Image (cartoon, rainbow over all chains, first blue to last red; front, side):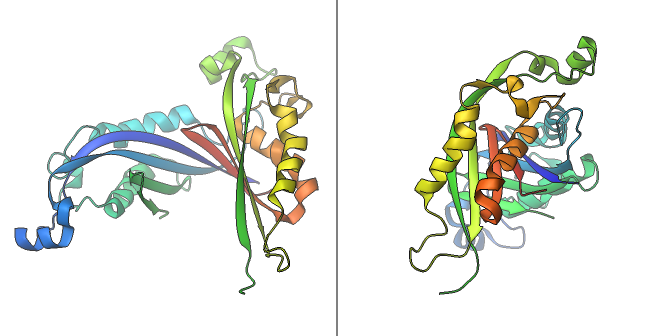
Length: 134
Length: 136
């Protein structure tokens, strides 16, 4: 069966700072530079599903269901929170784009039917995108 | 020069009307499944056509993009731009003009013109949603 890849974009805004608990403030400031200071982003998260076509509905995935899933397991947890201090599920995670992509993948993969999720992209700014494909 | 394929993407836009309606179902079943999508509405679509192939060493190109523009305009854009997709023959017999079915219809129209150079189609329904098709 032919595969179709469906990509949907979502938005949230959140605060964060990059800091490793294993390092001193001086070391963190040196390593992460301005990202060590508390700041925030308008994030975009792109979620890509793969699926085969249902010939009756003409759809390879239900966007209404995807929207509800992403809102429930992802957006509601992070939108307008400080990712570095106020999201228990991110405790111990240095909230780089790489780690957010991997963490969001884990949250979404657990909530979606097996095998459907093929890509999560975290667009931190217009210049920086982080993709994870499992 | 290294011989591997180079991928070239050109974007096209068209605007079209559609609605989701499965004639095999009752009105209630359509409304339950598709909600507000059962009402005729429209989108500004963007179609990204990606070609893959060897670079012609004489021209330095995979394909003349002016020729690609002419072909896509002829078989896709002129057909679907400012059209009611539900009235198009590609969407007869209960084939709903979803983004999935529309990207497949574009693929089937372009393959006879582009052959194996056609690598991927990405069809954006709006800035938040696209469907990709890389062949059957």
